[in-house]
Length: 368
Image (tube, rainbow, N blue to C red; front, side, top):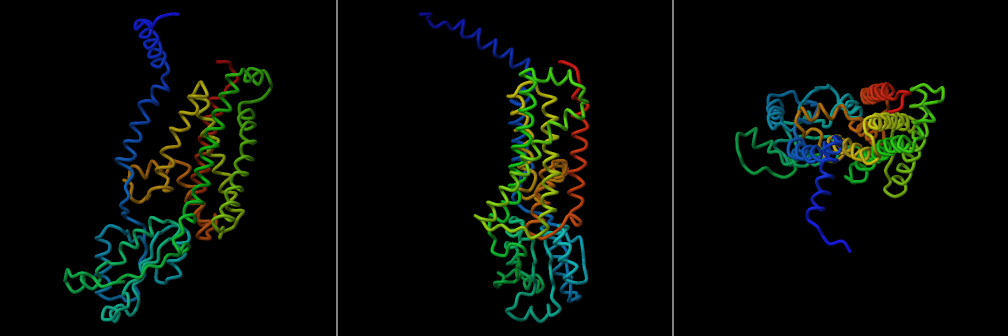
């Protein structure tokens, strides 16, 4: 029996370290993932909601109503981007996802200040649970104290909060629409990247290279079967969400499937692009996880999008999951259609075209 030798042990350790150093992608993952998580959780993720896009419907048109609107604006929770003249106009903005909150100042605002009736009303997008939480925090906003120049404890129900689309604040209604995108991201990106790399490792690519297939035909031929798988997964989540959690689809079902189709193509394009960069299945899995983390953390699925710093929001706009979360929640919960959500669909389409084009350019008919 061979005895234990520290010298031989050190030789194996140094050999593995040299091999790791030559494997640049794995080395980058070892260093990059902790740095990315530190920056995301320490810098980008912020549970304090600020600068929610809002509209104000001032039916009182008085100096006092303008004063309280200004006080709410100074709190930096709302950014009053629109001032529609009617509640119907404001609700159309809410349904389209252009705003998250409607502040309504009723015509009898002055009279309500002298009664127990709430002088203000907040209509919030209940499809986003974080927005509901922020609105509930403002339900005790000291309207009368501000207007009287006092700092007294406010009486109850100074602001009436009405949650559209999820009045009972049921968590599954917020979670399931975004969860469709999360599941598709995990499976489509990882499965595609690993499957294509495995084919190259097993030598199947050599046979395909000898065929008269173009790079575009070869790439798209590999994508189409996964599109069917992604649509099956979408149907499964929708069915279980309806049967178990009673999650509705208030908008056109065809629009939801079209949005899912474009998102699946975008995720597959990312997986194909990853497969052209990595050289092993292990690297493909690492790279897929590396792209998955920022998507789930920055897309608005788990944490408030409006609470992120501007640079983090700009980066999140590049990620496909950010746009699909808005599409799925808009169609399923708010009853919106693609005509009002077209910027999100356009962003997914552009991402798909760019990623697929780059991947096709990298897929060439030459052996490595």
